[in-house]
Image (cartoon, rainbow, N blue to C red; front, side, top):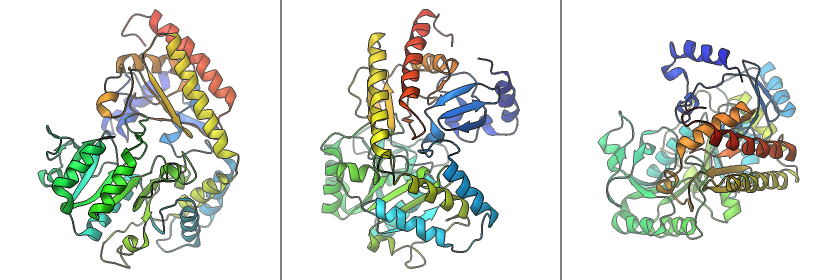
Length: 435
């Protein structure tokens, strides 16, 4: 495929935008090469500025569960825009979307809208600290909760040591208040509570991890988090920014039968527009200003365009055929990709939950970030570009989940699997280092 216009656009962008992108993974650093610049998209298809078309499995990193440019969403946004793009005052659409979210997500009794998933997780953590009067938080290595300071912390050298900042600009004090444990390490959670229990305000977790690739919880893990938080009076926060409405109408908490105290949401509830939300138990949410003392605010919170797009999207998910269709497509993708990789003797792990899919190019199992990092990232990069050349847009990183939509058909998945077979044939025939 010809990518001359994308290459020129990237060079132009790098002169005025750090790294040429406004979010790091878009720069293709994990897979090499030049990112494609998108011109338009419809359904499950992307078209870049060079005119190349791709079956899309990124779907704007999750929000577009009804597909690109869904007519119902576009109509709702257009109608809202004609009445004004922002008011800085309440609208009925905010209440309508809140009522719909509460009706779908088991744990949410009250909800507050904001403008991004990062803002939602930062606010939920502040609320948990304000509610408990405690400072420390447990997070899990490899889980991503946005770019807030408390979340950009890696594990220290020992199981119960203080965290280590992942980025310059994060203070030692923030790191001291963050305990990092391996995902799926239930015993590590109990050990941390045994040592710091009266200081731990919250445990925050991606209940299904999508930000180191799709990694699923072992049977005892989520129940252990719930039990430990209940015993020690800490707040359990499920970060369902990615999984919310994707793996079930009520997210992972519905699917797994585990009720958190707070839930963070984003992506799908804005239908492709910038949005975030956090909600949960009424007694905790009532501590939030102006009802309580914990401050949180935002000029564009509850933006009428985002509320309209979110309402249209969640209403579109009310069709009883939606989730069975997505579940079937996800299984078809994961099982089919496993068959293709096996045919080419590539060690791998593949999984799906609802409309989330993922595969690692490593021997299994993959239960945490250490396991995930054993993946053959060089092979993934070559495979990614071979798929791109054949009209399939996968995540430009081994460590990201993939997403399906109601716009994908069995035909699209089957075509993708055919291209995967051809791509691997080409990859193993080509000299190493070539795309």
